[in-house]
Picture (cartoon, rainbow, N blue to C red):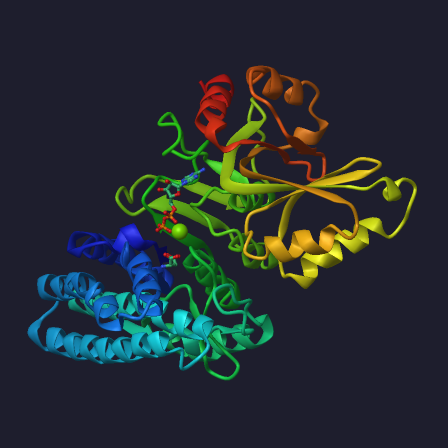
Amino acid sequence: MKFGGTSVQDASAFARVAEIVRNENENSPVVVTSAMSKVTDALLNAFDLAKKGDYEFAFASIEPHFQRHTKVAEELTDNAQQIFFQSELDFAKNELADLLMRVSRRSLPLQMLKDAIVSYGEQLSSRLLAEVLKAKNLNARQMDARRLIVTDEEYGAATPIWSETEKLIQIELQPLIEAGEIPVLGGFIAASRSGETTTLGRGGSDYSAALVGAALRGGEIQIWTDVTGVLTCDPRVCSDARTIKTLSYEQAAELAYFGAKVLHPKTIQPAVDFQIPVRVCNSHQPSEKGTMILPKSDIMPRVIKSIAHKTGITILRITSARMLGAYGFMSAIFQIFERHRTVIDVVTTSEVSVSLTLDNTDAIDAIVKDLTRLGQVKIEPDQAVICVVGEGLRGMPGVAAEIFSTISDVNISLISHGASSVNLTFVIKENEVKNVITKLHNNFFN
Ligand code: ADP
Ligand code: ASP
Ligand code: MG
């Protein structure tokens, strides 16, 4: 059972979580929690401030968030627990002050310090949640996720080493579960083989929960969040968004990858590997069923199930006359991205050109420099990817026509269709997102 930041944002949210966990008590739950809402952002902000030199100011900026933790402890746990939690909190504060000072002095690699700092969100929330559950007579025990999930050293977006992670989770958690205890661990955080703290990428607590669920061959992986399941589109873009009852793994993975923030993109794979159902539900309305993600979902009468989007996308267009009839050109292009450790999202090609989209442009200058050796390069920033997902989209006559005629006033700068049978993806200007999603949603869902 994974609880996101808004599901542990204050004392009443913690109390709700305790009741949700109690309802599953007989099914041997394992609890994974995010940091309290806004804490991860605050820690990252403190890191940035410290980088500029003023570590004392950086440390002071987190103080209100420490107080939020204390307030929850005061409202929901007994005196002895409060004293215990306060000593843990003080200890964490000392460590954070020291880490922020090191950032300002650059005394360790910054990426390493950043992960160490940001990990305190989940370290503290998991401790606090374990105490709250105990206060509510649940047999909870906090476990340090950094002793369970082993990753490579790609700080900020580390990849778990599955064979080791699986074994550790089984060895550490199975006996507790068998003894009737409820392990409570922070999501998002892990450690490298040498014991350095790493993180799985923003929103990574979903992924932690999926890893734990898969390692334990759980009956269900539950993602508890602030909306009722996976919706037909992002509710912040179009308020008509509705809950989708069932989705296939493949559909959910496409949606997550192309921007449906409700699930971290890597969440689905561990579930697929062991065919574990994933349920997405609302901690503010626990009686609503939410969305079930299963090996194969029901085919809906209107094929389209959901529309995801991702903003902040950059298109790169590489054109070269030398490419005509030549082999090895694509490979040369992709090797450049590999060298600069940059992920490509969408690709289209013609005889003499390749267009592709990037989400992360940290290395774009170096990439463009290398690509220029192969041909002419054009950069188009401020784009958005729209991903329309539905069962059998590739084989369904008329769907593409209907999608594009619904938004015939909008320029489409790139289309990818047919690579997967469940999605049609295209790229538009970022400022058209609301217009495009609202029109498509009206047409397909209302
Ligand atoms: P948590 O903190 O629980 O992990 P997130 O903020 O990461 O929650 O994800 C939930 C949010 O994802 C929702 O509040 C919603 O705004 C956003 N979202 C975007 N697309 C979708 C979608 N298709 N279905 C549901 N939520 C979505
Ligand atoms: N707390 C982390 C974040 O805000 C991880 C998560 O919430 O899933 O990105
Ligand atoms: Mg999330």
